[in-house]
Figure 1 (cartoon, helix red, strand yellow):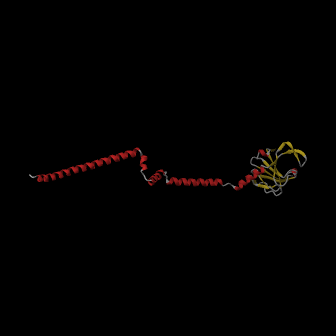
Figure 2 (cartoon, rainbow, N blue to C red):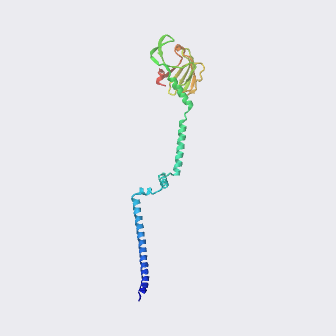
Figure 3 (tube, helix red, strand yellow):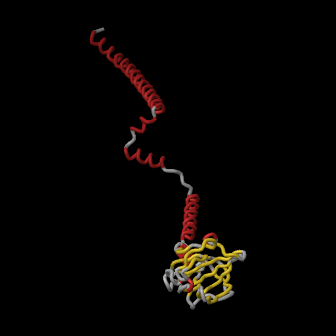
Length: 240
């Protein structure tokens, strides 16, 4: 056989062998690639599990923002929210109702307090005090309250008007008895008294206007209030 024939016979064999080897190597490469991918995936999963913060670093800013907003938002039950709003509204309504004072009652209370804060002469039934009108010493069985002539005089306690009268020494007067049996006598009013005997009266109601107490005319303008309890004069400051 000639050399050229030998070479021609060997060439197909080499090509067939190369193809067989090529298929083997290709299969081996695919297998190695698959194994490498599997190992890398497993490694990444383990790494993410061990270090969850690292996975957040791979998120974009917008993705992190969305994730944070969703996870941080507290759960809210609509029915609970509606109930809370209703309760708040009800509370506000109650507060508003309680915060609105009765103007008339407030003014009456303030008038009484203002009157009682202007005592010019105290009660003195045991120790005589000097009378500038009579130029002598005598007991003072009530309290004097300084007021300007013509001032409106409020009742200092709830009660019933027992008598309206004019006394030669004490001037125009009103006698009022409360539920505990104490009798309050207001002296030094003018003749235009606004209450009548038998009439129920409340603390702060106006009984008339001030004028003068004849037996104390030398003193500055005032009214005289005395209190009788169990048939005896007592210090009004201990009762009012």
